[in-house]
Image (cartoon, helix red, strand yellow):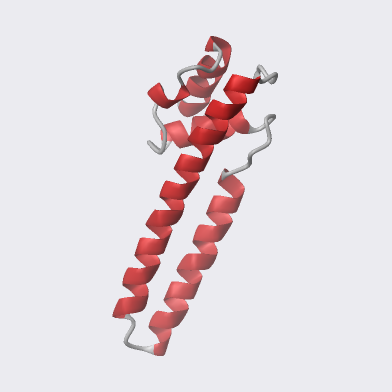
Length: 105
């Protein structure tokens, strides 16, 4: 997989990465707020805690901003619908092809 990133590709990658991460964190925050607002019993509190712990583990595993990992990260985000191919415009064709291959796995 291609691993050399130009300065402009790094800027695009950072923008795509941060937007996807921010959107996913906002989803988690909204779900947590809903869970907390509707908590009526102590068990509801622990359910919210378990939800947050699982969400954090998932996000920490998924969002790895190392250039050696970005093609895999973007492939997963593309598969999940968290990014679009249009957002990858400006990356080298071989990178976009690698990302779309990963997305089909």
